Length: 329
Image (cartoon, rainbow, N blue to C red; front, side):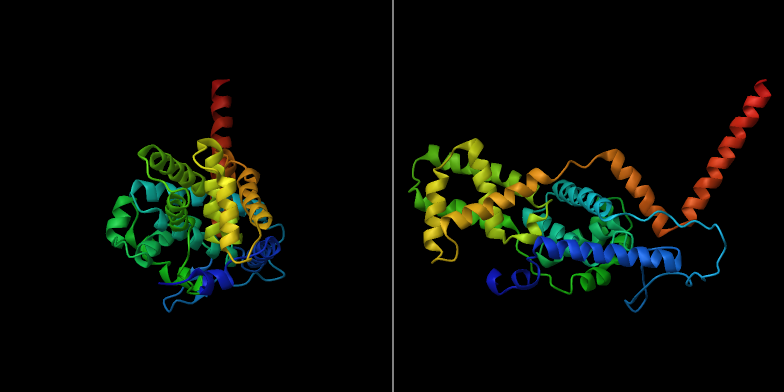
C-alpha cells in the first residue's frame, strides 16, 4: 500500500502560504500578459496534446481605442474556483460517489489551478474532467458516456481536457484525502477508549458523521494544500467533538502526540489543528451575484468577441427603446 510520507503529495503538494500566493500570482499574470499579447486568454488543446493561445499577436500599432476586456484579479479567480469546488461536491453527491472521489477531484482541481489561471482554461470543463479522472484513479468505473449523460453534457467535453489535466497535475495522480484518516482515527478511538457498549459506539458513529461534514468544508479551503490528510482529519474530529462531546479529545490528542515518537509535541499538534480550522473561519461564503459578475468577466477574457456582441445588443436595445418612446409621443 502507498505511504503518504513517501508520496508525491507529501513531497510536492504540501505548500506554505507564500508558495500559494506566488503560484496564483504567476498564473494570473501570465494570463493577463496573454490578454495583452493575443487579445484573449483561453488556451486551446492541440491535436498532439500541446497547448496554444489562439490568434495572432496584437500588433503594437493596432487599432487605436480598441479596449481589451478587464482581466480577473487573483481574489476573483479564487472565488470562482471555490464555486466550482462546491459544484464538485454537489455532482459527486448526486452520483453517490464515495468521499474519496470527491476529495481526489477537488485536490486535482486545486492543483491544476495553481499552475493555470481560470482565464486560460474553462473551470467548468476542468471540473468535470477532474471528477471523471478521479473515478478512474480511485477504480470506481464510470464511462464518459454514462457520466456525460448524468450531468447532461457532451462526453467529449469531459474527455477533451484529459491530457491537459494530467499535464497540469504533472502526472501526480496519487492523492490523500482526510476521509480515510478520519475512519482510522475513529477505529483507533474505539481501542483507546475501550469502546464496548453500544451507546458509546453510537456516539463515535455520530462523531464520525459530524467530522465528515467538517472535512467537507475544509476541502474547500487552502488547508487541503497546506496540511497533511491526518491533520485535516484530526482537526475535523476536534471541531465536531466540540458539538458532539463524544470523547475526551484532549486526552486522545495527547496520546497521539506521545505515539508520534517526538514528531510533534502536543502543543505543536494543537497549534496545527487550530491553524487548519482557522482556514474555515477565514473563507467567506460564495455570493451568487459575485459569481455571475466574475463569470461574465471570465467569458469576455476567454472570448472578447462576446463583449462586442453584447455591446451591439445593448445599443440595439437602446435604439428600440428610443423609437418606442418616440412612437408613443
